[in-house]
Structure formats: C-alpha cells, structure tokens
Length: 596
Ligand code: AMP
Image (cartoon, rainbow, N blue to C red; front, side):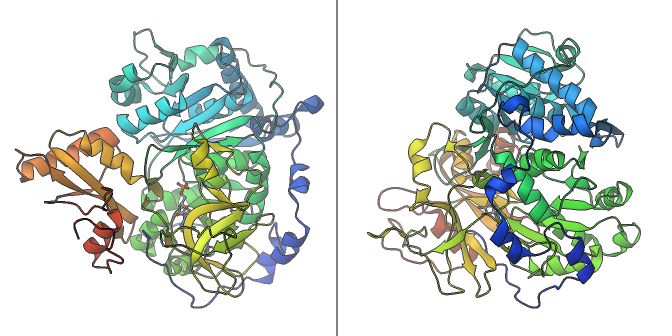
C-alpha cells in the first residue's frame, strides 16, 4: 500500500436541523431506498425529437432555452480580470466550435485533445467537441512533452487545441511522432506561420453560431481520460454520454449543488474531477461555475471565496492543508458567509483538516471518494448527515460498494468460488463497486484484457484498500498497487521510470511515493548508473532537470543514485521493498527477492 492510514475516529460532526432541512438530499437512508438510475435519467431533458442524450445539450442548450441570461461561466484570467458568459452566449460559442470541427471533417468518435490553461476557450472547446459528437480528451497543461506525446499517440488525437507557447514547448519537440494529428488550433495571441497550426479565434469567427447536435446514442463515447497504472502505458478510460446522468445526480447528492449556487471546483479539467465537476455537473444544474486560470495562492483563494460569493466549493486535501497552514488570521479578513458546502476529493483527507474546516470555514470539509474509472463520486459524506472526520463517507444512492477479501498480491482474492466479501466490520479489503452505474468507464482504450481484468463476479475492482465500520462508513487504508498520489494527481511509476531511463547515464530506475505532510506523497526515484558514469552532484542535478524537462509536473522531486535495486527472481523491480526500506517499514515476504 502506498498511503498511510488517515485515522481519526474521534467524534463525528453533527448537523443542525436547519442544514438538514435545507439540504438537497435531506435523508440519506430514504434516498438510498427510493433512488433509481432510471429516475435520475428522467431528470435529463434529452435531445429534441428523441434524438438521444448529449452531455453538452444537458449542460448548455437546455438552460439557454429556459434561462438564457443566467451566468454559466465566470472566468478569471491570469491577470485577475473577470468575464461572465451567459448560457445563451455559451450555446453560441460552443455551437461555433462544433461547426469548426465539422468544417475540419471531424466525425462522430474522432478524438479532440486540449492542452490549455483554464481559459474560456478550454470550456468552449470541451463542450463544442461533445456537441459535434467527437470525443474530448483534455490534457493537464503542466505535462511535459513526454506525457503529452504518449497520450496523443495512444488516443490517436486528430485535433489538438493548445496555446502558441505550449505548442512550442510541449508539442513541437514531439510532433514528428504523432502521425494521426491533423489539425492544431492555437488559442490566444501569437499564431505561428507554419502550416500545421492555425488560429482558433479565426476559425471560431468564421463558423456558424447555429449548430444542430447530431443524434447521440447515450452509449456514444464522449470522454477519454488517461490515468496511471503500475505498469505499461497510461490507461485511456473511455466514458460515454450516459455518464451525465451520474454527474448530475451525484452533484446534487454529494456536493449539494443546485441552480442558485456559485460553484468553484479547483481541479483542472486535465483531471477527471475538473471535467465531471469542474465543467459538466455545475452546468447541467444551471449553476454559475467559477473558473480561475491561476494556481494556488492561500491569500488569493480566500479572497476568491469571499469576493465571488462562492456557495459550494470542491477542492483537494493538499489545498486545504496549505490553507490550514496559512493560519486562521487570513480567514478573519474575509467574509465567507456565502460558503455553504465544502467538499474534498483525490487523496486521503486528514481528520484534523475536516475539523479545521468546520471551525474556520464554518462547515466541515466533506470528503468523498471516486476515481477516473468511476467517472463520478461513488462514496461521500453528505450535507445533511453527520460527518465522521477521516472517513470517506458512505456509498451514493444507486451505488453498491463492497469490501473484498485480499490475496497475497494485495488485490481481491479470486478463489474457485469467485471473490468473497468481507462481512465483518473494520477488516481491510479491496474496495469494489457493483458494476453498472451510468458513468462507469466502458473500456480502456485498445486494452480489452486490462479492462476485463478490472472486473470479477459483477464487481469493479478499484485497486484501493479500505475498511467499512459497523455503521457502513468507509475508511481509506491505501492503494493495493504502486501508483503514487501527489497533490491529488495520480502518477504511474512506470511512466516516470521510462522517461528517466532515456538519459544515457541511467541503467535502471525505480520510482516510489514518499510521505509528505502537504502533498500526501512526493515522487522519488532511485537510479543505477551505466558503467563510466560517476554519481556526483552535477549528474544528480542534471538528472533532476532532465526529468523536469521531459515530464513536467509528474517529474521526481528527489533522485537517489543507488548501487543496485531490489528485483524479484523474475527480474521485476520491487518498488514495494524499496519503499519499505526507505521508510523503515517491515520488509514483508522476501522469498521472491533476488537481491535482498
Ligand atoms: P484518479 O483516478 O486520478 O482520480 O485517482 C483515483 C485515486 O485517488 C483513488 O483510487 C484513490 O487511491 C485516490 N482517492 C480519491 N479520492 C480519495 C479519497 N477521498 N480518499 C483517499 N484516496 C482517494
């Protein structure tokens, strides 16, 4: 397991009657009994004339028809200037981008990638892509050229929308290895002269602001999100338009979100949270979505919460921990009276931070759990219910979660009679979800076997280890595999190791997560050197810089040159053992180790 238990059974935080009554889901037990996915589906309007279900229609056009002047997006740019875009304006802009794609000859299912900062163009491109029936794959703009190239290649992106600066630094160096990429559109100023990149603004200006969304089968692919595994290339999790049913329902149940809210999700759309809840769900609810292009800054974030009158805030443990460190005096300078609900996702949320939020922000941070593959929140603390600090909460209405017995490899044990559930309370096992909810991923791109291996006996196996207490609350214990969570971002050790091994000095690399009080974990690499290289400071600094250049935000923060690395007898590097040694933990069963 790669994360320490986040304990904290001490004292649940109760809810007042007023909060209970005002919550969108006032009674969890009743909602679980009465909820059905078909009922949730009936909340969607569907395309006119029964032409199917399209996420962008639910997010934009249906509100443009009924509340055209309501503010859909409030976008704060890098200089702090704000623009507001109404639902009707967003309809026209997204229509234009859909028309641009049609003009480029893009068809249903073609993949459109974005590598953009959180500007208005990102949201217009994302929703316009869905209108056109194309598949959206948003990439995190802090990725280096290596992760960008790998994902574009795996996803066979035909269109990429990026900025001139990111194009120069991240795409141009790898452009030759991307034969499927036909069109690069550049957002912002400074369009270059070369033939394969053109101006997004010019394309939008020349496009039609009326666009009829083509018939969309709810099972048509809509989104492609890359996530990291322990081995091999990143996995492309495929999601369909039907997912919007879960985005919408879970946003009401877990985020307590509705049309009157001003909602801020601090996740970048390059990660699944920033798409499901940082783009789609607030708009399907007709709320106002705040988008801030700028990165974390404690003082500014408090100011944003206060000045923008944020009522529902969805953020991450790393950010909450940094705010808590910043001290309570900063909070006192700001009027946070509009803030009604705070939710957190992505990594374990310490019980102390939940309590800090309750005392300082006026509402506990409501932890919830989900992952790229689940597409939407699966387990949550709820607005109307007591919060148990340190617990991820209980399953959403419509979701059945189970704890499965684990085998020696740490994953669910698949015995002759299939998997078996842990029924006794407080026993650790692999978290599993009964397959079949609307936002469940429909495949790993080009990897049918890997997809099939994620399921057993009708359960989706999450790769996380949890325990369930006697009252049905879930507590995170760690990962069953070697993936690393740093500042809420999943990092696959293999991807980092492969990039480091491209350096001529590196013979072998092994990458692990080491505990960090703020980011949860930090990426640390161990390398062995090829003959002829000396492990001096200059080489060490060169390797760190090499990692940063190639990988961007997922690069290791620390690199140690080691004389050798532990292997299994079959030659696989034992990251788990390396981690145990690094942290002074028990080394476990060493019978398969070649060089103990
Ligand atoms: P991603 O697919 O990048 O969203 O990462 C999903 C993984 O993040 C999960 O499998 C967990 O390991 C971790 N995670 C997400 N939410 C939580 C949470 N509330 N508590 C602990 N870990 C979490």
